[in-house]
Image (cartoon, rainbow, N blue to C red; front, side):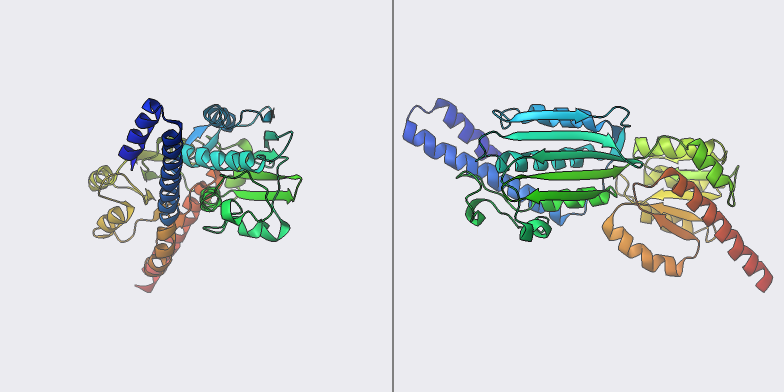
Length: 364
């Protein structure tokens, strides 16, 4: 498909016949649309786990606006950015894809508006990073607001019964389905406000994940059962997440000793050489050895060590329920997890494992 697109683009550049050129442009547009539809279908079918790094949402917005400069021509664009918005820990590709969908939908909704306008706001609210995309476009009928996230649903093209969009504007119906999935995988929420004929506002809220424990979090952790100065194997291939977890585990109030493994083979090698007190184990790992392989390798020789799975993979979240019924010394957390919750869960798992050990000792 990509080869055909390149050939079509070359023919367009060389073609001098107006009628043939128009036909080639139509073919190219349909090829691009088909490519995008296929991409959306593949993304929707696969439960991809976010690959997270720290970045500023304002920089991603600027990047997308620059890439979409041609689409935004003739549209009044207003940016309202509050100061002090921290870096977002998220999958940059997923967030970029979401922004493109939101802004493209606004551009389409403004196609019949005399004075088109888009307002983009970024701010913080209750430990959440928020961004809004608001337009004064055609709006969404009230009866369709809940349906916009359904796969294959669209109000464009042949479904445009109100004449709200210019001829030629089409939608695959999978863009907002994917966007909702992305936001949910980041433990975020989407709110939509819309009035037919007046415009639409989407508000996206994503949790702040800080790079270390706050003083308030440290105090709160210390009110419970705190286990410290343990030896922990941290298995995590995403550098940003591994750095945060290493920092909060090795500093006050935990003061653990921590080794980091960025893939399954390194994790198994380290486990074979050292005597750990707990394993923090990512499920999705690079290469052919995943977190479950590491788990079985560990359990083949050590049935007692507590293991905390960390994963945002939807398929894994279903399978872990059955595994937890068989193995009382494991637990799991979904990505992204808050630092305080991560430490508390490790302390809880230490306490739970110690309790089971005491009960086993009494029974013998």
